[in-house]
Length: 210
Ligand SMILES: [Fe+2]
Image (tube, rainbow, N blue to C red; front, side, top):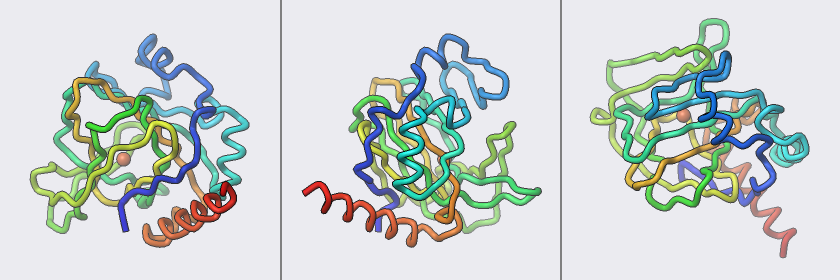
């Protein structure tokens, strides 16, 4: 079982805004900018703002989820972040794991893979909390690399987010990545169950298209 699954689900009518223009014309936006330092940017928007209404409705129905928001991740060429993180959902002071997200990159990319590491089993635990962006992060040099995969630009890649992950920035190009964050019964299931459910869905829709 991989740490990702190419779902075959299209994203060509997903975006409601010109993402690059929105972020770079005014990088600092109240309630939206999570991180901006000219090398890296992270912006979080409500789902209805970043995604087209029709795409949102169809996608929620298809995956049986509730997409509540979208994240935009920007990295300049060769910017290598030294840590890997797991995604968490802070609820009443407890950081609940976020099992997966729906991701795609904005340009075709075969050089800058998302990288997954084995769950950290040592003593060091680092909670990072930046505004509404909460996660756990460890330096990659203390982690053991497990797998890597370059995200698609024309379909949703479902990605595992409850084990440490990062991006290797190898190319000369900047990288823009979109994440649809969703809730629903899947987020309570372990990765194996989520993976199998999505695989089943993919097989069913492959059959329909034949
Ligand atoms: Fe993440």
